[in-house]
Amino acid sequence: MSRVDDDDDLTGPTGELPAHWLADLARVDGPSAEYAPPRTDAERLLATIWQEVLGVDRVGIDDDYFELGGDSVHAIVVVARAQERGCHLEPDQLLAGRTVRVVAARAAPVPAGYDTEATDTDGEHPLTALQQGMLYHAVGGSTPGAYVVQVSCRLTGDLDHTAFDDAWQAVFDANPVLRTVVTWRGGASARQRVVAGLRMPLRLLDHRGMEPSDREQSFAHLLDSDRQDGFDLETGPLMRLTVVAEREREHRCVWTYHHLILDGWSQQLVLRDVFDCYRRLRAGKPPSPRRRPPFLDYLDPLRDTVREGDGFWARRFADLTQATRIAGPGCVDGQVTTSGRPITELTVPAPVAGTLTDLAGAYGITAAAVVHAAWALLLGLRTGTWDTVHGVTLAGRPPHLPGVTESIGMFVNTLPLRVSTSPEATVLDWLHDVQARLSEVRQRQHDALSDIERQVGLAHGTGLFDSIVVVENYPTWIGAGDEVAGLRVDRLSVVVEEGYPLVLEYAPGTEPVLRARFDDRRLDRPTVDGILAVLAVTISAAVTDPGQRLAALAGTAHAAWDRSREDQRQALRDGAAHRLGTTRRRTVSGIGVDADA
Image (cartoon, rainbow, N blue to C red):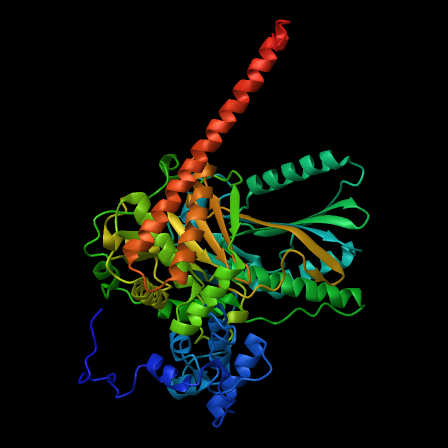
């Protein structure tokens, strides 16, 4: 990192101080600074939006965004709401500016010319970049359950079956994207279209007469067969619901849909609308589902954000010599299989979560940057290089498009993140660099991965990477332990096959969770458990001492990996000794010899 001398020019090309310096000046008194009320229309607007999104009673123009509880997840919603109310800014401006004073000074009016009128949902429409990739794997010889998402939970309470079914059908009818099918025959490009009058398949099974052990076995079989059934993409519908009555006030619910039509953000919106409709129906009112902006309205604006032929990816990967892979050989002929993937998770201790928040407040480093950086470092230890590539999953919802955060559809995309590390760099400088790389990728979030791999020329049909990191970047409306419309939700599970042998997830919160879904034919559970443990150690060490050299952090991670491997070997030795002892006792008993003789 270059040093700034006293006589260097401290202004940007427009003569303005960099946003993070302005933010520092605005926070000279720290979090205890006296409340300063908004003075301009832009400041009043942003302060109101921050109050709404962050759930705080009052926001002054010098209050720090991170100290108020903001993060990159909230930033998408803040920017989208500002856009809808005539104030244009980018998420990076919000994260860098950090105060209403600074952000409002850099905001601009929404550009004229964007047509917010709904487009006709009739006819055929092109697929997004990620939809094209999913379709390729889903129909290219793969088993029927590829890219099938299965959400299951237990509902405890007095479930009104008729109202519950009607609520689901009302939401299904209200959102054209849920009635989407895909066609691709005859050599033509794949297209998606909405089918009018399509009904959502709903079924009720009664398992109340079964023994508890039989119920569990039957439900496990139901989940497996439901995944394997898959969907007929050309005829639809591409979602269905199964409700299983297990006791008088206890039901299991299985909502299954194809990933082509919904992302994780949309999943939460659908669930919110369903339970809102159910609550109204139980009160004797019409379901009245929300009128949400149709996904198809955004296809043309999303394509407009793609910048083809500018050579960005070729430059970014110009001197990369190899792809980054950590798993064993993949499926034959590129086939994506659908056996239920094991999931393992680890809770990040609360003190580490607090330190992450402190790091964001002090330096503007997001949790996403820390998690991606830590995984890049572990990839380097696993593959023996300081230059790695892994996949980053992006929301794909440009905040400048009005209503985009309230739309239901498949916006998400996965793109490559290249992280080059220097052992002599400080961890803080490295985290800033990774965050800048993430920002660059977000600016390209609608580019097609297949086009990128062709430009780079290293994938050779197997991809630039075989691991992806998902930082949950959508507002969560319903979760395990919640009570909604008189029903308690627990035993919540989401099963999805993304086509990668290792998917790492980070769920933020007061006690964040690291989660791994993996292909156990290519990675064994002890290895994945070790990856999560070492990743947690690396994150903790990075945020606890961001001033240390990267070489020191790598040494900490390496030592943690060695401990994990030794723990695995000891567990194997203990298991073998136990089995040997059991075998000896059985043998002695079998030939009638006194074991104490």
